[in-house]
Amino acid sequence: MSTEVSTQVTPALHPDNVKHIDGYNDETAKVLGMTETAFSTAYNGIINVANAREKAKTNPTWNEAQQIIHTQELADKVMDTISRSFDSTRANLVKGINFLEGELNMPLTEAAAGAFGKEIRDHVKGLNTGERQTFIQKHIDAGDERVVSAILGAPPFLSGLDADMQSTLTRFWHMKRQPDKAARLKVMQGARELIETRAGLVFKELEKAVGMRPDKVRLLRQAKTEAEKAFLLKDA
Image 1: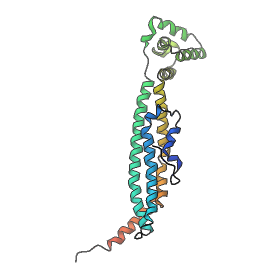
Image 2 (image 1 turned 90 degrees about the vertical axis):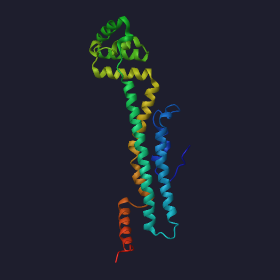
Image 3 (image 1 turned 135 degrees about the horizontal axis):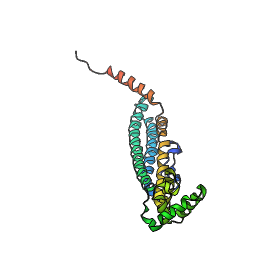
Image 4 (image 1 turned 45 degrees about the vertical axis):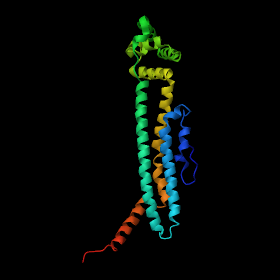
């Protein structure tokens, strides 16, 4: 369900921002449902606090301080809900990202290389660095498992590679063979970044909705508590 745009909240927290993550489409949207929900929870929660602040003004028995205090009580509950939503969503994203990273970085085995594995590695080792890179990339792009596994499924020095280059090329291979996983990983990383860069905006937005900084609201609460003590019955 689409969330209406409100002038009461920064556009940076609107759930439709999730749809602008690089790589978002009908397929990758399936792994971003929690992220959209988390932003929707934040966006609508802030709107509810802003609306409550306006409604509080219509209570003839509340002065401005009372309006602020009651609105802040709602804001605290909303903040707790939003924080738990963002925290659990980010944790699930991190878990999924780590799983996919493991899948896309999984070492290859030489099993598919067949009887010509050594000859393939000797040929690659004899090339210069640029030629070697071009040769391997060409066979990755072609999906040539026999050649690629012969090179990347054996110790890297046998083909004139170092460990870092072998890991990088192995990842390219997996991403080429499993584009669905690569696509999911990309949008999940984008969703994690979106949460990490935008979730902090909630504090300022709730402060704006309440109409006063939290530290000043605390002073109001303290003053209210002290004043109410005068109305407590004391033992004779």
